[in-house]
Image (cartoon, rainbow, N blue to C red; front, side, top):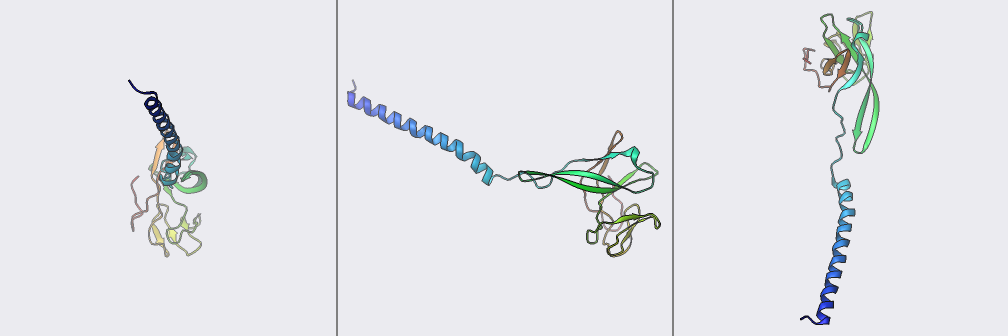
Length: 172
């Protein structure tokens, strides 16, 4: 038989250990999310995926069209919507090319010059064919092309890899 003093000492130890154990679990419950927030890697700064660029039927044949697009980017825990554009060319064979709106020289915005039938960069005089190939100027490579896919009548733009040097051709 246990004495009354030993039994109360054991109960006291059990109660103290239970209180410390519960306090430890509550502390861990509060600390773990904070540690994950501070030391966990936030989501990628670049959201990958396809962007809807509109209806293919709305594109003129052989005439470059500047198409507005809306990008959703995630920067850590912030979500940003960015307006951008792409130059889209619908070729007679049904192939569709989509270019970044920035010149490959210094990133200036270029435009379609209908009188020359070329893309022209007003900053430094680079000229590009409707296929994106460099005709003249300081631009070091063809225009950067989006990956393209068509789903029904919708045009979808993918990632923007750099064009290979020289050829202006890129398979999508």
